[in-house]
Image 1: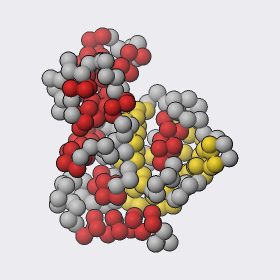
Image 2: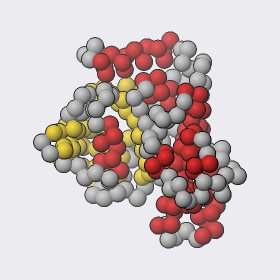
Image 3: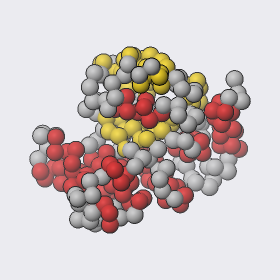
Image 4: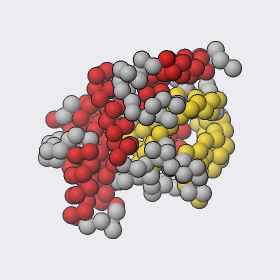
Length: 258
């Protein structure tokens, strides 16, 4: 699903520090339309801080962020984010439909009927048709995370940031959600930047893997993933190329590869 070679999102010398502690130490990266890019790195490397900075939730200490070549100084209007903790990102007192509709209420160009149609389409695309009147606490963890993904899709972002979105579910649900996000990405044109601690997950999902250093973090490797695009949880992970990529990425994270 790769698009034009012109960057959709570009980051130049991005830095962020908490007090005197520098977490992000000058990151440069660019994403083209339609890419699926994963980010991995050591624990505490600042992966979540990076996503929160890109999303506008944190202001960088220095550096620049560009969308379509234009400098961004606030929350980008074409960007959505899915968090790891679905229980905190959903409003328990709202129905599933109301949760998905929540960010659409700011889009005054959409009529009530258009918002309702987006909610319906988004829930259907993540396999949750018929759950509109349920509440998050009535759903399993995996289903709650699907609601969070549906809410992001309803916004129709150009860039979807995902911060370890499947880390809090069991192994089988995680595989189901991995395959879900690939189907969603293939049918909804958007660029995905996906943070994970799981090396296998990064290789399985992405077209590129960006490996971060220890804090203050920088991009130390940009590794292409030339695996067949039709991914399968068993066939893809059994490929020798998959094992080689996993070993290469692990080596960089552990400092065993220069």
